[in-house]
Amino acid sequence: MTSKKNALWRFLFSLIPGAGEMYMGFLKMGVSIMALFFFIIFAAASFSLGILITADVIVWFYSFFHVHNLASLSDEEFYSVEDTYLFRFTDLSASQTSLLQNNRSIIAAILIFIGITSAWRSVWGLLREFLPGIMYDFIWILSYHVPRLCAGIAVIAIGIWMIRGKKKDLTKEEEDFHGKQ
Image 1 (cartoon, helix red, strand yellow):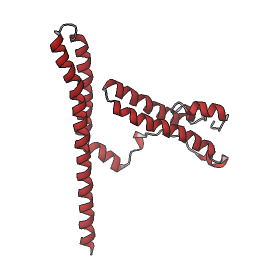
Image 2 (image 1 turned 180 degrees about the horizontal axis):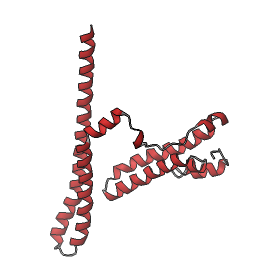
Image 3 (image 1 turned 180 degrees about the vertical axis):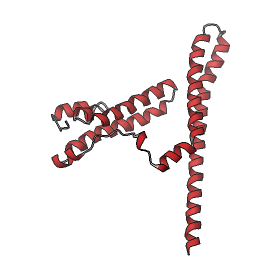
Image 4 (image 1 turned 135 degrees about the vertical axis):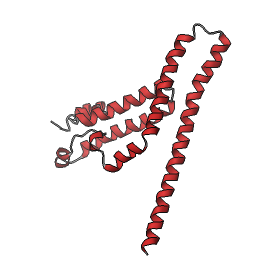
């Protein structure tokens, strides 16, 4: 049962992403937000991508203000709020499904890159005891900077790809508009 509950406890729980929503009875929302928050921390720590912590700050602020916005609703509005997961993969629209299908190779490449990076770190941890100092230092530098470099290049490539896609969409809309006249 959802309710606004005690203001002090609501405030204290709102400091933990997802906990405030759960305290108010929105378990699906709370679990979604909390899972996203901790997944970002895991990904940032696992792949040495500290920039991901920026996303965690955004999730934290979203959760904090979401709880207080829910509490500020009138009772009628509050009780009409549906408790749903933030990410509903079963309810994907046709355009979202086609987007996933069209980008399967990109998603697969990202997952493979993450897997290789993770496996390399494990192997590296085993080998460092057996390598001479200078070789260890060189390989450590490579293993630290190459994944970050690849991630940066991937972000740039995705940005360029998105800009080109938008440009193609605009060009097509313009052609369709002029074709109708």
